[in-house]
Image (cartoon, one colour):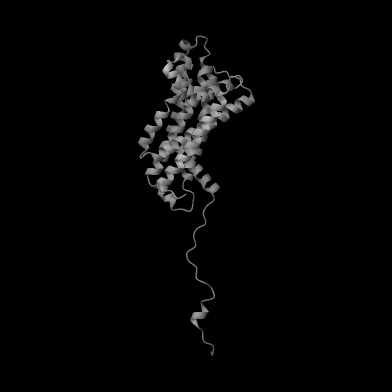
Length: 276
């Protein structure tokens, strides 16, 4: 064997390569995975789902059968109160998002997600999407119970479509707002406490009584807070009446709060160490 192998040339034809970084998952795939995670969490937390349905239903029965006769003698109070109960149901259901997000932020799982080639803020998006689906289901059940106790809407298909679209926008807006609250609080208990404060807004609106029956100092706040135009728009849509300028105030309030909540959530996530 006359040929001599030169080890410096025999193994230098292929350049050495370092460790190959895993390919990042697409944003769509990541969001779908986390939405599925959020839905599974919702299915396991049956008590929270039942409470978000039972409490508004109990309030509707209380206001309809106990207070309704004193407020509206003709028995039509159920038609007035249902839009407020719907938004109250949405608020109770959305508030659990603050606790879910705060739990993820405090138990270290978000830090694990950040080490993966994924958009880790999608964990928050998953909670929001699952909450939206859960609350739309709860809203449908509440409307069904309202029909059983005498709610008789006069809305046509277009009016129902508009009312449901506004309800979905309201749920999405306040779910992101509760997600931001859960992001900045230090614990699930604190998130629950801060989120509960927002649930008083429907009581200080036209949800249960006309604002002109309130004291003058309270009437000004009730007329110009975000909940009142949303309730009034849903009310006229379900009654089959022409919409007023309240619809623009409702959409404007929801859009502005949604934008603020998204920015707040994103900035809070980055401040807590999120890279994506």
